[in-house]
Length: 221
Image 1 (cartoon, rainbow, N blue to C red):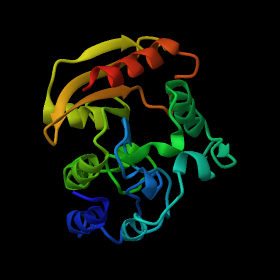
Image 2 (image 1 turned 90 degrees about the vertical axis):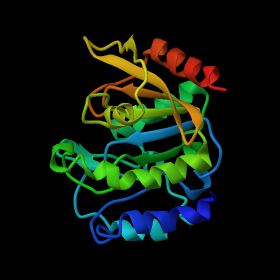
Image 3 (image 1 turned 135 degrees about the vertical axis):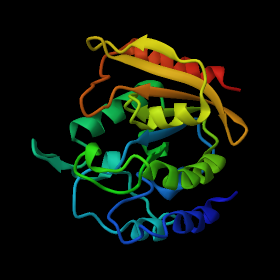
Image 4 (image 1 turned 60 degrees about the vertical axis):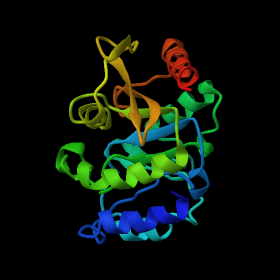
């Protein structure tokens, strides 16, 4: 598998949804290469986005990183590029892992946009999954970090597909936990780490979580 094949697979998998608003990659095309981490949110937020077909067509030329270069807004306000709370939390995680956020391949389990996660059909994850398989075969990450770890989340979807004994770590916020499990995807070992959703959970200052994530990268051979 090469990166040039990913847009072809994406157009085939999403053939019935190409005019719907959404996005495939949240990072530059330059992240479609071997790397330690794959970042996976649930689905693009907001409304009135560009058609997902446009995202597919620009996948091999786009140099934008949504967590650094985009100005986000919601009902709470508008932020300068890279300054929204969720963006800053993502940046903090990677800064403390010693990884440049711009080098991390980032996507969402479901590519179609909605204002709220509850507004999107979770079954769309199965339709989008062949595209993730193609991306993962190029990136070959040791660790997948997901936003959210409930049954209806990227973590829940991956655990339902690949199983594996779950690990639990206190998140440092109330009774919320960080979850994880080891599995194989595309016949390669990967550790999947599910954080509480970063729209509500701040990992900032929680060094035990960073140490745990770092240890999982080191453990995967």
